[in-house]
Length: 112
Length: 113
Image (cartoon, rainbow over all chains, first blue to last red; front, side, top):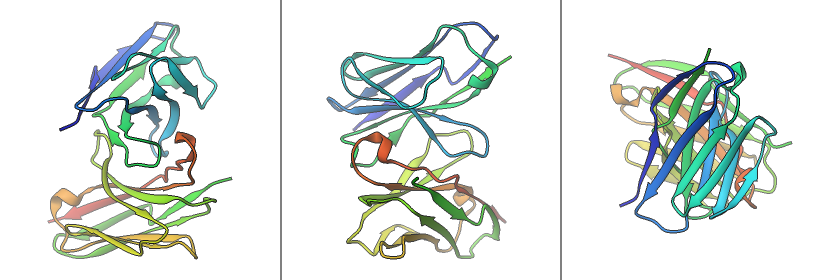
């Protein structure tokens, strides 16, 4: 069966510090991978998605970036965090964009 | 612009009662519609996914309906349990890539004993 992992679960970082969130998927090959951010009282906002290694599409201009160094690994990064980067970050995978997405447990990020 | 409106924003019902959550969308074109359940502090979990040709789809005590003509969907929960307390998110998909998904803000459901 397929499993999706995210870490860390919780992170508190000072403004201006770097960020690296990791997501890995097990039990499937060549998945579509997604990074979402969820702010309180808001719907999920798509940040990045990838259909293959090294292929990243960005949906929202911001100080975040994503990379897919391996087929089942998706990394969300920032060189300098802003207060507005605080939120709940979710990684997800799917067989294709048409299909159901399966979400990870999420990372709660608080930037102080 | 694709939009999703879910109602009510929040709902409190007693354990054992039924409830229905509503979703109106203006997504076009339309490919499918998903309902997710999200427990507090957790990632969303898929309940159903329906194409335009499907009117009803069930997953245990959860039954989703879809009217692609009026662009409305509902999620009915039968014999609610305390574990049903969560946010329920409606997500229509217009096709194309991942940017074809439009996430609703969700209905926050609380089941009281």
